[in-house]
Length: 239
Image (cartoon, rainbow, N blue to C red; front, side):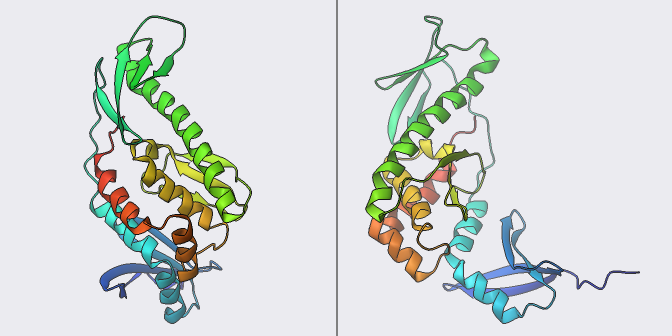
């Protein structure tokens, strides 16, 4: 028997003054879901869901939609950065010099303004650098969560590192927070904004005005930091 599910249809909606197109696909699913990729905003909805309810949800997540669309639009063509002895990268807003060495047994070691790497081969440099930066990211992010969670009156949540290409952080219904390890390439105030953003979801699991008021309580200059995050995202090295 042929499927009676309506085909994907094109729609437009105004979000904060921006004209946004989206593709709507209906199915037997129970909830409305939003996804954004290189094709733009795509919405999955139950067969009988009303357009009014669908677009109400889109508006509720309007900031997220605009952020992700901008991230895809501004996404640079990825190019792998060559790491050699003396390469300088920016970590947490400070220059960090990569020094390749064969001294000692440690695979990597952070020193003042320098990261010492001991790769087994030239081809293993980038992978080893990523492992070192992930370790650094985990320590810094855990510290920032411990600082900001008490300000919101909540326990420090479990932390997981993410490798998502277009998502800087997330908070699930259990209160677990995931932060993209590549945030380590951002200045600390920008990291703090993302940390505060995800912590705010422990109070408001949405992007409503009440949610943004919680973010502002923790990070008064969040709008500036969010803009800085968008701009710097284009400059992150591809390892």
